[in-house]
Image (cartoon, rainbow, N blue to C red; front, side):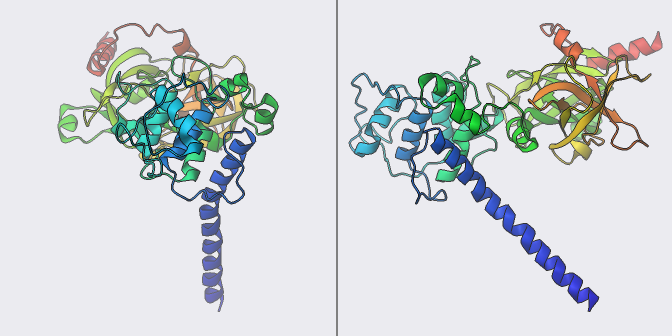
Length: 430
């Protein structure tokens, strides 16, 4: 009887746990759509169906609103030439076409009711933000992957998009900067008077303290799994000797990891959250005592596709950290895939013989394989590099301060991994 009762209870619990997962996805889109309505980016529509497929005309209207174009709807008398655009979308389509953000399916047809796929929408959004497929920033067939790769979208969009997908993508874009500037989409909308700072603040959009989920959405794609190879045989057989972690600090592929992660390796590859793999080209800086290395990751992946940019993290160092501050660690624990954990700082300057600088002791969980990951503050800025733990301690994880990287000269040509291995081997013989 007890076994039957336990089985029934487990079944009920599984059912209860399963329901929120499905409803949470719908709820996320609804909450974000409500926020966009408050910001005047979505029209109020009590009967709107966020699960309905988005159309090309709807995408054009939302894109122009996101750009603040409805506040200054000057099209210079431009007529795109499309004969099938309904009145409610005509101004937006002309505006976006005039600026090169959208195009038709022919010279006279826009196909306003056509379903919108992820690459088409992301291409529109990227162009609005200043990226260009014509100059090689991205390829239309790779637009959704590129948007995710640079942190524009919180997840890689695929297939035909729903209105809920569009709402989430627009919401994610609000704190993204226009290419080559520090101006976010939201700040420009406020400058244009589309929305007010008080409305944005009431929605929590001006609060720079992120939740763990918000950080994961925005920055988990800036981290990568680092696969290490120590012998030519391992390289030939494509069998790595160890896994570690790393994270990008620039759009062009500069990244940080631990020195001990690359120690003794002759080759390394970085695998992103979506499975794309890029080879490590050079080591630009390393310090064995501090246990930090800065590496240059190729922008051409193993499928021979080149990206113009990576999502990346900002370094702030340890000057302002205090015990009790919340922190978040992102990395590749146990080689099982990229993950995020949260905790607090226990000590800001813990002395250890193993390290030349005092370490940050914190309770954000890491495991073997997390070495070289990022330790971030609540603003999503890197303060340290996750490096180790006390074996017999309870939640006593170690991170080395990232400050030396901020002072390093990263314009040097650097060394290959083989050269670093040879240099350190020669030092060991002295």
